[in-house]
Length: 493
Image (tube, rainbow, N blue to C red):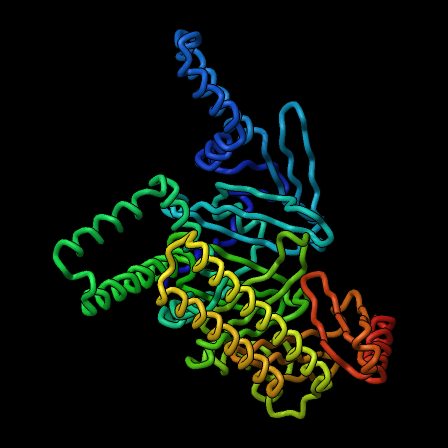
């Protein structure tokens, strides 16, 4: 099974951690790409001037100047970026005119991510990013590192990659029911469509429709079925390629100090986080995953900013896998928590949800009816009875789906505080668990709206550096007791 190779411990004679080092000369490849992006404005301006007859004679000089600027910027970036590892931590120097000297203590290293792009794999080179606690941005990013240099940054730690990968079929299925995994697919589709000027699909559709009309097969059910299966096959193939490139194989290993996740075949990526830095866990099981018996487990670490959070996701996990990971984190297994007596929200909260969603559904139905009526009377757009019936059917399906989800949420939900750990279960058509050690809470907030005040209910929100957990509706006394318990715990900490 393919893995990111664990670099061997370098000998002192080959590399001294106290000496300043720079990355491999092959680091110029990504640095050239970075320089092109940085000087994109100059490149676009030069391309625009090249079409002008006034500057046509100067085009060779302009082109030579841009090449020297880009190549020189990349070379200087590589030449004047150096690092070293000392007993105190990691130091980085970069810049020729504007010099910068960064120092990062080992105790402050929050997260270390190792990437090995496909163009670095034959060369056995790596790219590394380091983040520290309390920062708002990424401090260190070094590319083109050798195995020995990577071992220096990692402190010579050896990580066992003997753990088997999650089966490919389960990871591929995870691309179907995890919405965030569809974003790369949509991005690729949008990029292809934009490169083809957005007219290729329309022209192909028009030509195919005209051909079907001429052959008299436009209303053929068999042909429509084959076309639908063809579209599904293309989507499945795209998800298959995405799985191979970004997600498979998926190796997750842990020891007493850290967790490590390795994913991807073509774009291989390694993420690390210290075990003590895990602030909360999220277990998701969308409605399709419930039929398959699969889960997604998210480890939330320290967040350096609101835009980029430190977390990684284990896809295609079974109940046994989830129980094993929770047990390793010294938490109650999920199968045991589900058997415990969970506290539920006040019924008034769900009655309010029913009223709110009913009003939204009625307003949407009235607006859709008025829109169809206006279109039919003014004949602005030709609309057939089939299209109108389809619109109404879609609205009804969405409404009944939301109603079914609300009913399932009301029946299957609850929370439990066990050994200073909060376990929150949001049931429904899909299931969502949040596991929060209370010592990781940085802020607790009690919210009481006008409706809650009348019902003597309180909404309790626990905030960590990497997310929030909300108890939607608790009685006043119960919320105050939980608040007091948390304050006592934080005071002792």
